[in-house]
Structures are given as structure tokens and as C-alpha cells.
Amino acid sequence: MENFKGYISLIENTLARQDFDQEPIELYQPISYILSLGGKRLRPAMVLAGCDLFEGNLDDALLPSLAIEMFHNFSLVHDDIMDDARLRRGKKTIHEKWNTNVAILAGDAMLVKSYQYLNQVDKSILAKVYEIFSKTALEVCEGQQYDMNFESLSSVSEEDYLEMIRLKTAVLLGAALQIGALIGKASSSQAVALYNFGVDAGLAFQVQDDLLDAFGDPEKFGKKVGGDILQDKKTLLMIYAREFAPVELAALQKENLVGDAKVKAFQKFFIECGAETKAIAKREELLKSALNALASADAKNDKVKTQLTNFAQWLSHRDH
Image (tube, rainbow, N blue to C red; front, side, top):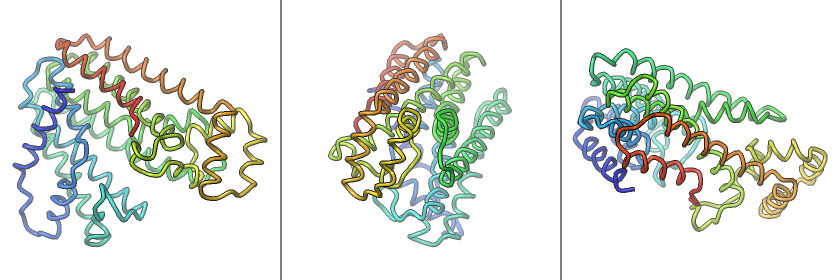
């Protein structure tokens, strides 16, 4: 994906020019630290792709793209506190390296910085961009709360699960594309179509993530498979298993299996009861919906449209 490598290079160069060498250092140093840990930069790249799709000026989209990246990292900092995570991208989390209070405050400052970067868009679309971003930011918080709520529920419906991952993961991808499209002077309807593409592609991404966690190749996936199974998470696979074979699922859960034995037993069960097949079908349904939305956006740049098509297919069929 040649274009995407170019977008990411532009983003990295723009990030490198940002000055976080400010006082008090206890506030700004953690921000610089979390941004230096890398990441795929896919969300800010979507801002540039959305702009480029309509042949807009990428320079106009660079600082707004940092707003998306800053917000994403803000959410990670606070998620790490809630999860009591010790590592982020192989390095200490902010609350581990400093302390929880520093992490909370640094996260708050990152949210403010997001709006400062966003303020760089043309004044003619600023109100609309603020509306999209603020709505999305609140939805991400709602998704996180639903995810936490699910931990105490005995079962979750497919509809509720898909809504949770839409809010927690997919809407930010959609908003990045929609904001980029508006910067590129797309019409409101074109920008909404691109938002829908991003949301459905994000949902397909998360369904594939569920499948990889249960059935992925550990060497390619980069971590031990079966983590969701061991933690009894209510993934789409577990939801479908409860739908197709509730009695058998209850009996399996009562066996109180642990470790590899539990993972292997549930892998076998997901396949035999049809949960894996239905999850794959849902992934393909979401991918098709995403590509239909992209087609309806009536893009100007066919090369970028092809890149976005390939991106959606990679998201939903990746092996790591």
C-alpha cells in the first residue's frame, strides 16, 4: 500500500516537529513518551486518505490528522489505567513509568491538544468537524463503559456486542475518514459514505480480531492465542456458541478447564457448533457493506479508492 506508507511518513515527520519540551515536564514528557512508542498510525493515515480521495491538499489535513492520533493515544493511556496494564507496545505504560495521577493528567492534556490540532481546519468546516469529533469522542467513552458493563453480565446479544465494538473501535476510524473527506472538499453525503465505510471496515477488523484470538497462528499473531477464552470474554464466537448450543456450552463451562486444555476444548466447540462459520460470515457481510459504502462515495482519486479497498480487505483478513 504505497500511498499509505507515504501518509505515515508525512505523519511521523509532522509529529517529530511538534514541541513537547515544555513546562511542567512532568505533564509533557509522558505525552512525548507515549507518542514515541510508535504504533501503526492507521487512524491519522485515514484522515490523509479521506482528503486525498477527493484530491484535497494533504498539507491541510496534517495537523487535523494529529488530532485523531492524539485522541487515540489519550484513550489508550486511560484504558491502560483501567486495565492496570503494565506494558504498551512492549514498553512501560505511563502510569507504570510515572504514576496514576501523572497518567490521568497527561491523558487529559492530550485530549485538549486534540482540539487544538483540530482547530487548524478551514473555518468554513470547523463547526462540522468539531461536531463529528466531539460526537465520536463521547461514543468511544460509551463503548468503553459498555465493554466494562459486559464483564458483569451472564450473556450479551450479538446486537449489543456489535454496538459496543462500533462505539469503542469503529467510529474513530469512520470519523477520521469523514473529517479527511471534508478537508478535501467532499460533499456532506460523500463524507458520510466514507464514514460508513470506515465504521463497517472497523467492525470487520474487530470480528477478525476475535477469530485470530481463538484460532490465529501464535507466531504470526504475535501473542498466545486463546486469551479471550481463558478470560471468559463475551466475544462474537462465544455469543454464537450460546445461540447455537446453549446446553452444551453450559456443560463445557462447568468442566472448569484451565490453560491449554480449556483453549483447545473451546476451539473445537466453536468449530463444531458453527460459531466459527457464522463469525466468518458476519465478517464478510461487514466487509461487503464497507466496500458498498466506499463505492457510493463517488471518489475522485481511483488510486486511493483502490488503496482503501485493499486496506479494508487487509483489516478483515489479516493474520496478525
